[in-house]
Image (tube, rainbow, N blue to C red; front, side):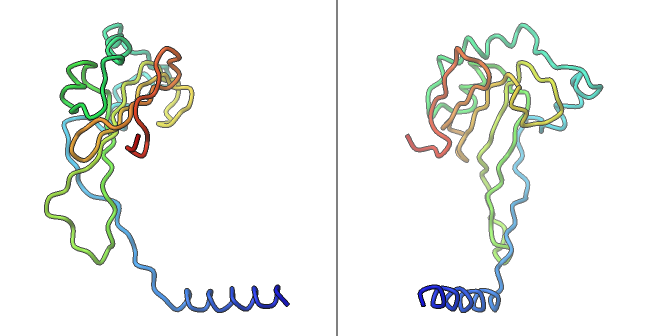
Length: 161
């Protein structure tokens, strides 16, 4: 009996959902910054020809300056400590397709300091890198080193501590 009631309830719920239109969502737009995107950085590396990317010795400032990072630092302050990132990914905010685009868009950014990379895969888990995440107001909320055992994460992916 319980099974019949459950099946009937699911059938009714499915019929209601099928009759409704689900609004589409737009997750694209323009969030300009002065940093290259991944594909722009990639084509300037030996990775393009199947080689391996190893950062120059001057990139050691990323590891040495990392301990001075503090949550809520402005992106400019972080750049002063670690140098210019290799690339950035702007995370354009999602909106319903029926809503007009916002007049003044501020986007959170993810920036990457790559020390060593062996493949073209942007998210390769064997990369040696530091990834920093900034709010739409350019404040650091998460720093995540990858394959650098001497460095520990700062903050949290949710921005809540």
